[in-house]
Image 1 (cartoon, rainbow, N blue to C red):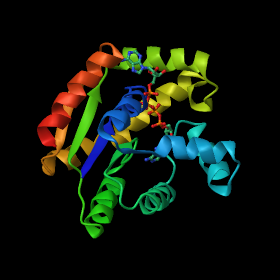
Image 2 (image 1 turned 135 degrees about the vertical axis):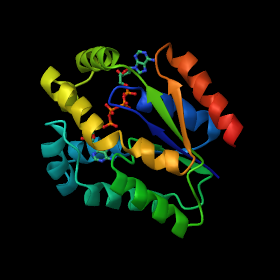
Image 3 (image 1 turned 180 degrees about the horizontal axis):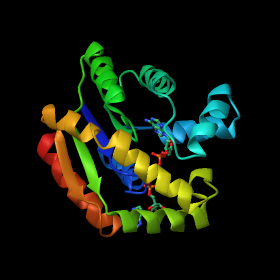
Length: 191
Ligand code: B4P
């Protein structure tokens, strides 16, 4: 089984690369951001609660995100592999994911971090705000807060995977295809 964590700050290209990776490696895409946006669109209780956090660029509480991941894993029992996109975002989530997979006799194959500098992140998210109506891209101060939240609460997840000997990073600047090739090289070495 091939289980990949794709990691990086907001706008680093996690979602963009995941779309290509699921096709090439036949993986189930588990994007916590997509699940939350879907819940918001349907106005479910989870969506109504999550919107308050996402609109400010804050993280949704661990317990809610963790429950979403359990539901999705259970739904796809027997899958050939998963790509975890935007999850884990805290050390608590990383520890939880490790244990949840262990119970199912599976583990993360590799964690790949997309390295992108602050100015480029800002540029991409401002561009995206012109093309979509994502409320968390609406305003530069919200985008800046998301990047801050990443630095304060999420970046330390890298240390978690370094300790597990699963951490790899790629230069996230370049064309989508160039970055995809860099990621595939790493995956092919770990398969
Ligand atoms: P996410 O959905 O994960 O959003 P993201 O970090 O902004 O997206 P990503 O890095 O995937 O960017 P993309 O490929 O689209 O999270 C949204 C929110 O949900 C979080 O802020 C949080 O509130 C909540 N949330 C999600 N998961 C959570 C969790 N586990 N715990 C708690 N809260 C959680 O790329 C961005 C833009 O760049 C696109 O417009 C794209 O076209 C462009 N782009 C991509 N690659 C490019 C390239 N190579 N060159 C130029 N542009 C590129």
